Length: 138
Image (cartoon, rainbow, N blue to C red; front, side, top):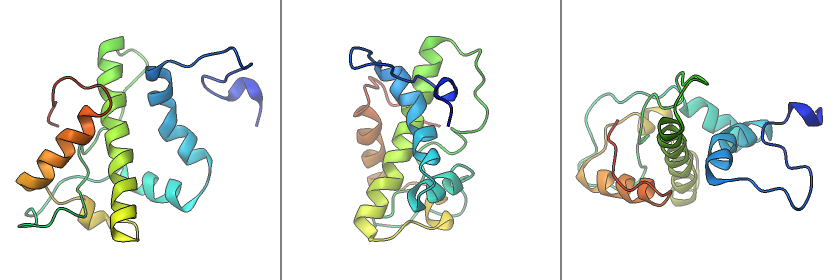
């Protein structure tokens, strides 16, 4: 891979990457690993909510922001880009947490269920971990 093709590449130890740059790049970096996790993450990008929520189970958590990976062009304001990046990080974290809790990757059907009230509180907390001061429902 050419060095100049890497987004937000760090050239030296003294270079820094702000939160927004890291958040925007992380999903792409995960996909570039060509790992099982990257493959499952990529598949989860197309999930849309459908059906009924689970009655009481917390896991698997559903996709927190269906459609958050669908088209957000380079013309976004910095504030809007930050919100999109936080939503995408929350989505990535849901895929990680589900894999850790279930011992397997959640199916697309499981990710596509709307959240119940317990799951919604969990998703709110995960979103707020990334500096979101206000929960922004999808």
